[in-house]
Length: 153
Image 1 (cartoon, one colour):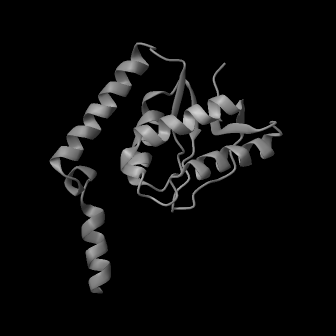
Image 2 (spheres, rainbow, N blue to C red):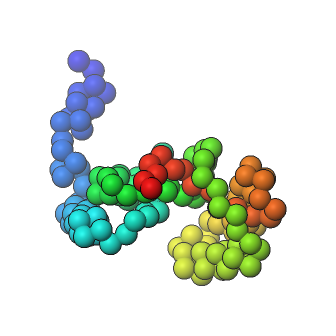
Image 3 (cartoon, one colour):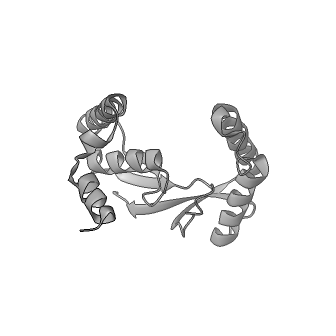
């Protein structure tokens, strides 16, 4: 058996709990517990979460936990433009007026300070993705796009 296959088997044999830090494990448990409470007490009838095929590990965790907890709820997945190039073909579009578009951009750039240094995290990029989604949905100026794999009415 090669060194590579031996190492691969060793990694595969470890459970998720063994592969992450104690702090991350606790955070995952707290997130799951909070989601289970919200789902059990029906505190929402619409959930927004990260796109399931988002390649960022933290985004996937949130999306997976959302799907595990909210099985009887409409879930819309949003997209985030970034290096991974994992934008897809959303199927739910919501027209956005120019004032709301600008307000969203202002909030995102203000709230996500850790992303400001990223070359893709600009007002221009955020506006462009909303313009592109407007073209796809035939909205006059801007649109939000979501992946609606589960819609409960």
